[in-house]
Amino acid sequence: MSDALLDVTISAREEQGSGVAVFELTSVSGEALPQYAAGAHIDVHVNQELIRQYSLCTRPNDEGKYRIGILNDPNSRGGSREIHADFEVGKQLSISSPRNHFPLETVATRTILAGGGIGITPLIAMAYELQARNQDFELHYCARTRGAGAFVEELQASFPENVIFHYDDEEKSQLFSPAVALGPCDEGTHIYVCGPSGFMDWVIAGAKELGYPSAQVHFEYFSAEVDSSGASFEVHCVKSDVTLVVEEQQSIVKALAAAGVKVDVSCEEGVCGTCITDVLEGEPDHRDHFLTDEEKADNDQMALCCSRAKSARLVIDI
Ligand code: FES
Image 1 (cartoon, protein in one colour):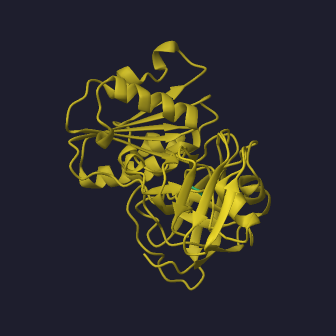
Image 2: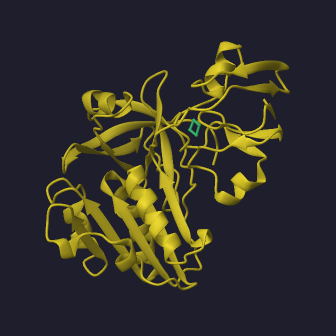
């Protein structure tokens, strides 16, 4: 996919569940928007300074358009609040082409999709794709209450045999349990998890306890707490020829900005991958939710917005 931005118009907006706005995006030129595979997201340029990522959840019959669902998150750092307040039908926006860090495996014989709250959005696209491929899948949708969940009627109508709803305030038997939902590990089962970070940590830990190898457990965090504790360390930037100290409670990105070295960032929480940079020397202290365990073990790249250093000095390729 090219890095060129796409100009789109909001062609529909619908409020669903508790505080979710569902937007349909149509190309300003009238051409069909680029195709994408389930699990992809787009960057939405909320304003000149703010870029946020949202998963695409377009239905098969929305051909040429995109659909995103955005929760008005009270803990938002501004993105979702501004979108809910200002994004009305007819507004034009810039978005990126779709990027996919959360693709479906083609080898699975059985797929379990586990979504918490607004984390259901990429899983909706996956459910449509699995249905089109005629592959076996279960879609578990966890929400606080029946009224809080978005897309409920659509999921019920589209996947009556596959969707299982779990509402926190209803009968205990309905509550989501990783052990029950995922079942014993077999090599054909792949698990996809998206939702609030606590939910995801719980499901991923449950899958590990059941013996699922990390290659069969796929996830995409859309927000995360950043732990910026830890001692100061030195960073040398090879291309910019700048050496600086990253202080306690300071991110590498902020320290670089203070020294005049600009790094592209988006989420600033270690979930989107925008700031991933090659590491040439030293040992990162990985704190992101983007790199895989294997990539972290290689120690040759890191997320500059949230990760720190285990070694006294890092040399990075920027
Ligand atoms: S800006 Fe998103 S991972 Fe660093």
